[in-house]
Image 1 (spheres, rainbow, N blue to C red):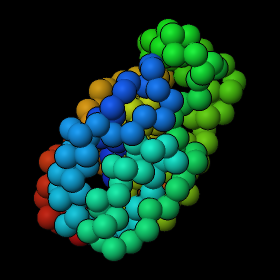
Image 2 (image 1 turned 45 degrees about the horizontal axis):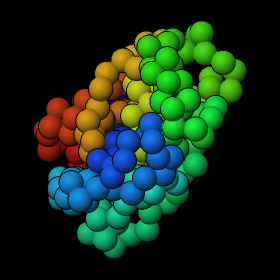
Image 3 (image 1 turned 60 degrees about the vertical axis):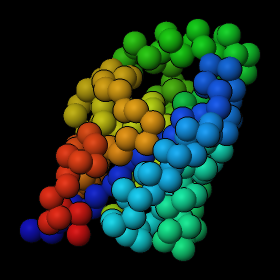
Image 4 (image 1 turned 30 degrees about the vertical axis):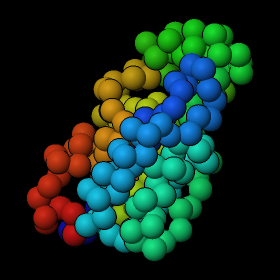
Length: 188
């Protein structure tokens, strides 16, 4: 039996401002340190294809790993942050707090379409890959893998790596942190 394709979903490092107040904030000094540590933790896996959301915080998180591997970061627009209906920080924050407790089956068409784009990007991957992305993106993938309709089913912290196995179009969760899959046979 063929080994499934392993996809490492890395949540971006800590930003200088929260998403509620800045659409595309850079990493904070703590976030830059987190990105360096994440690169050290992930470097034994590769080099692998390295994808990132187009947002600055994801690209900055991926940069130290790209430097270690001497590879390019491929930008994947489908794994960007969930699109908010307003650029106003207060409206955006209030909206986000409402949807985080919702279910996909009750969500507006545009947001379901966004989630479907995320899942299309993930199921298109044909080799072990690292993707630096966002909280709701990771939850959307885990929800699909576990058949959970909630928008948020778990809480990955900054630079946590959620490990997804893909067999054909079927997704499963191999681990909620990189430590969950530390068996060397699983990461080769």
